[in-house]
Image 1: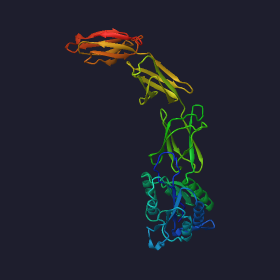
Image 2: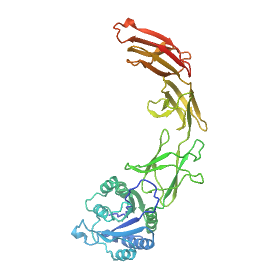
Image 3: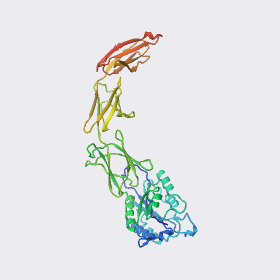
Length: 454
């Protein structure tokens, strides 16, 4: 039976913002002590290579600030003839300065029994102290697939969905296609053929465990430069869903995108909250390096202008992508807002409404939309009535607004008449004949008041 070497890297994750103070990191080494570890690897055995590498790594982690380690082993106390599928033990619990004790225990391991990965993972989840502020890392080292009818994939899936672990790393030793297929559902798979490859993968894992991975998000403008900034960004878990981080993008004192420290074991979907939002999917980071994530978000300005309105008057505009019905946002007049470059449809909530189609937002240019100052229509009536205001447009009457049935006195802001005169059509409430309908034509002048008595 082919055997593999699996590194299962995961951590508890309780915050979704950049770490201001270094957290305590806890690394649990979960070592396979099953009989198959005596199989050959290069000139020695797999257990010899694992002991050698783990001893070196544990020794190198001495005196590392904010770090605690522990050791759990499985398949090492009962021979395969016992069929023991619960043979797993926390040999050395978490503590500061226990490196030498772990090294001694590693050297004493003699492989014997079964490969019980799923049960060991479940037990290992309880080995970490209850410390929501810590980064809990688990590294599983095994040369075989599950032999106890457990389901490591289901365990991994459940723990990830519950927010207990992050996506594991799976490194197969000469596992081939079958092992890649089996372990892709557990985590990120790597194939290891030699002891040297084992060493390189462990270096990557430890680098990630110590959280030495950084990134910057380059928000690219219309000319290919990373000048866009000051917008929100949300990092989602691409595979499992759920929010991981929120940031407001910032340029540092050198006018470069700020450096972020985030967990490298997750594949991200990043949403930049421009108008409209821009999404970049399947973002993966290289552990132990500084990563640059470019996202195209070319923006420019839309300025809406109306003069002569009072401080308590508000004119709104609905902004939509050209040809679409969905409203992106409402923008007030006499404001300036940035949009992704493209064409937009505007619906201005005046009386009557103004519709503007295919308005371009262009690079390095502020698109200015100015509408006339509205005029005031003062309506006065001594009795209740039914009616509405209409406007002539292409030889058709278009409805503008209804009149209040209990109208006595009302002031309505209307757009200037220009070549489209208005008409009021009304009937007194007490009248019972449609023939008692009245009409009045009128015009509106910008920034002036028109009085009509009904």
